Every structure is written in C-alpha cells, then in structure tokens.
Image (cartoon, rainbow, N blue to C red; front, side):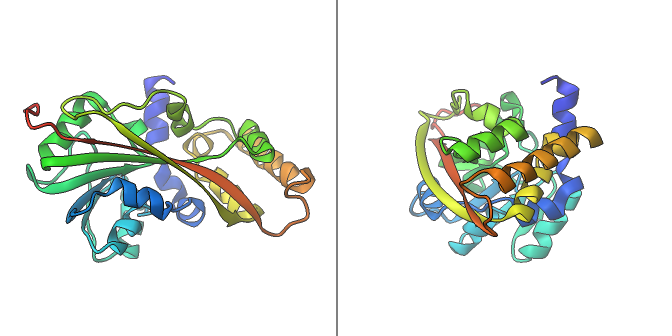
Length: 251
C-alpha cells in the first residue's frame, strides 16, 4: 500500500462513525485479562476510536485516558464514556506527561502507526516496568462461509498485519503472545455495517462498494451455513501481544 492510500485509509473512519460503533465487535474478557497485568491502575488507550476496547478498561475500574486523532470518533467516545479523559493525539505524539501510565493499549490500531516514532513515545509515557499491549479481532476464516466472506470483502490493513510477525521492538523486552477464539451473534444488516466500517470500503468508489455489498448479500442468502437465518454466529480470533518496558529505555 502506498503512503498516500495508507494515510487516506487511516484517517477515513470519521466518515463511518455510526457503522463502526454499531457493528465493530468488542473484545473477549480472556483477552482483556491477559493484556492488563494484575496491579494495573492507569491505562492509556491509543487510537481508541469510539471506545470499543476502552469500555473493557472502564469496566475494570481503571483510571483510563483515551487518545484518538479523529474528531468524529473522539466525540462519539466522549459521549459514550463521559468519565474517561479523552484527548486528541496519535501514537507518535501522545499528549500526556512522561512516566504517567502503567499500561498503554492499542486495539485494532497499531498497524497504522510509525513504529520508529511510536515506540520511543510509548516508552516516554509509561512508568518504569510498564507495558505496551496490542490486540486485534480478526474473523476466523477456518470456517468455510467466513472464508468466502473474506474473499468477497478483501483483506484489511489489520488482516495483512496479522499475516506477518508482530514484534514489539526496543526499548521493550520480549514480545509475549496470546490468542483466544470466540463468536458473536450478528445479522445481515449488522454484517453490512461491519463491511461499511472498513477503511478500504469507506475510501472505495461507489462501484466497488456496491459489488462488495451485493456479494455479501448473495453469500448470506445462499450459503447453507447461514441462509434463511435472521441471526447467525460470526467467529473471531483475537490476537494479543504485550511487552514490558526495559529499565535501560531509549530517551
């Protein structure tokens, strides 16, 4: 993906806030438990969007700061979670003081960042011994009808990232990994909204968008696994990564 297209897609989500909030999945509790170490008090959620992962942090009674660059997404988050400090910023320019949080999370977001800038910035913000925690929800395409869905939709930037090795680099220690499978109930309308919330669909031309939506409708009406059902299970795999900040961190 060239830099201009990448930038266009990365900044497109404000054009589909309603679809994003309605159709994007939350995160399984097992993943949240693994990502947030015992004793954590303060968390900064990077690229927080409308607050899909932020909600899980709030539910744990943590002190949460959400950082989101898009004005529309950030406004939706602030409306949904008024108790959360919500700031405009990016992973490359985090608007909080040095050594101020125990954990930084990035849910469905780290594949958009410039790691050369984001890693030292995360190190600046974390307290000694703090950790960086990354998580992605990815559809489980080992299920045949979901594989067909993926062929119709095409790969997102997140799915491309998951096809590569995810390693959190210096000044962090070894990258630990965890994976959990789960399902959520959905229906055709929500599935179409999920498709509409994807950056490469938001930025596609009308013809391409229509082709994808028509393909999804045809799949759901014809595949024996889901045809004729008002609701059906959409399986996911949630991929988690974490690494602790080394004591001899980069300044």
